[in-house]
Image 1 (cartoon, rainbow, N blue to C red):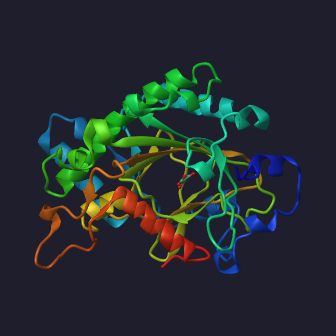
Image 2: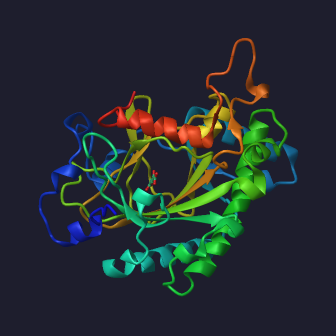
Length: 355
Ligand code: AKG
């Protein structure tokens, strides 16, 4: 099996210059920088909107409607938002952060026991990116990937056995986050003028919509202006939820500029993914984003991708979103076909150039 080098071991070796595979092409390097400095610079400019979900729980119809309108506006204009008052207790979020950090604090040899094997398609477990394009570019991160919902579909043999409460904490988090997923999908449905349950059903519902957890571990990087933690991409998911350890890094590409996300306490970052962009016929936007690295602090993020089943559902713009003036912008495809299509596009390019 191909073994990718662990970025953690590179970072800990104390090297001053990063290996060439991690150096981004020149055109992409123009606007890279240390995440902390970029966060400071970003204080003046536009910011990813913060959406308060409290109103959706209200008895008052007007407050619920205002909340739906705000979600609809931000999903259409930005395709990304911070959500607050999402309903998941801070205590549980702190536990998720703790068990993820405790796992990554294990020695690399211990984590290797969970190594994935991308050559045989075993993608769950501990991993690092393998070069998948001509330029052989790598990302400055290691990760842990596993399915967390529905529980029956989870392969418990790959879940971390340390710390001892990892499984219990992650199961509870998955259950509670699944509730937030339903709530977001309900608001996004109403925002399109659809029945509240429509998007949830179209994506496979409680049985078939899969929640995939990717814990991203970005070691300190001696040359943050040359590297990326995660290269620019849009998510293939329907929705993605991101939690992090309050170290900056995420940037989104809007109006021809990279905008650095602020660290908003007690929030999740929610991305609209390609799947919802397709179902909504482009009303909701799947935004290009990437992860910067920095010199000072390890960054950890917990990204949960909500994916429709691979083959069971044909994704296409919902008939309700089509009019004479707005014909379908996306040809029908299964989720598996969409993944293939994106991989193909990528192998044709040396790197992703923002349009
Ligand atoms: C990904 O894992 O696909 C991400 O985009 C992670 C973003 C982040 O770490 O904030």
